[in-house]
Length: 113
Image (cartoon, rainbow, N blue to C red; front, side):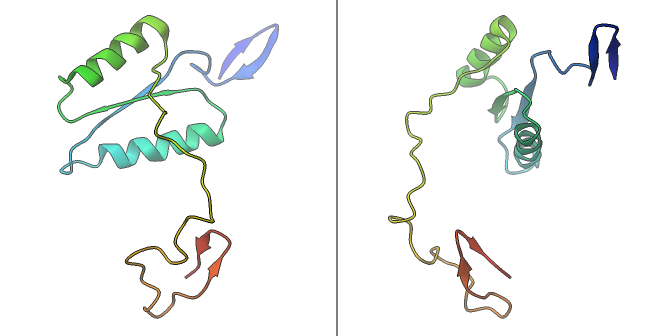
């Protein structure tokens, strides 16, 4: 914990820009780990940027890295994102395992085991 006489204690690096970087390879579990960390940071109300690449030489990654180094943040195109609308969602997800023992009914948006 960093301690300053005029401010309450906070974790070291709490105000510094954070970039989470992961590989996009099916061979290594980097992306899954990054998504787990991002979920935890979101829940903790911490700001972060996310970058991913298969080999860290592509323009998408390099442009994002340059942005993060210059501005401390990476902005992604979110024009494809739409609000969740349960009216257009299928009642049962395609390929769901509802026929297996232990899978019961749908409650809200979640399937319960």
